[in-house]
Image 1 (cartoon, rainbow, N blue to C red):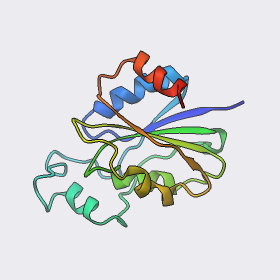
Image 2 (spheres, rainbow, N blue to C red):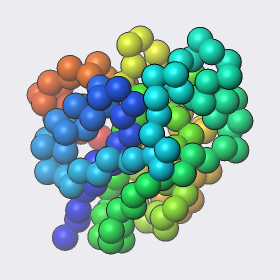
Image 3 (cartoon, rainbow, N blue to C red):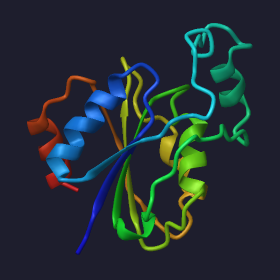
Length: 157
């Protein structure tokens, strides 16, 4: 029996809203990726080159620690992975999440929120973190995307 997981990291709540809707649409389990050290507003200030998010995104090898794990990851065949777009890619905490599991044989499908940025170089940045998995092209949505819009997207995958 195939199982679906919708895992997401949300800095401001926008991705969380989208992930909850997507989990309902695909009848999947929901998992919030929680950073071990939560991000503050100052950490997320991308105008400040010394902010935590700026420092992390300028060092692609950096892997923020995660406070929680998915139990029984082996039971999932399809993993939708959600995040806000940072610097035209996924935040490096998404790499941390993917790299802590054996993803062999799984399908990974990114989805993102952003005010205006597209997916950019997301898949190229995530590819090495998805060893053994099939990494599908992802899609950016407005946080207010409807269940109907998400269903149309997932039906077309």
